[in-house]
Amino acid sequence: MIELERMHHVTVATRNLEEAKHFYSEVLQFKELARPPFKSKGVWYDLGDQQLHVVENPRSETLRANGLNSLEGHFSIWVKSYSKTLQWLEEAGIEYEAEPDSAAGFSQIYILDRDNNVIEFAASYHS
Image (cartoon, rainbow, N blue to C red; front, side, top):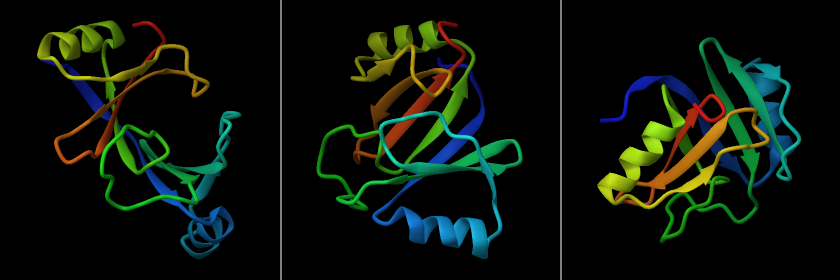
């Protein structure tokens, strides 16, 4: 069993980052956070113990036909152990994409549920 700790963040895709930033920063007055230098465009917000990540993806679709794309909307759960989570996923036969040294500042594992919703498991580097 995967040992869950907490929800880390929710990511939503936008086709127009400036319009999304206006809504979240100006209208809702969410506090912006520093964002690592990803290749993608986006903005992160402080939601107390959790975060909201908004990423620009001009070709975003609400529903995916197939394929794993971390720029699509997904939710992230912080786990106690990156290596134990990888082991559990392998034993369960669940396909994943792992980013052990992500620019995010923590390790990331992405999977799809049966409806192709993206789920991220995040953990301290190499835990």
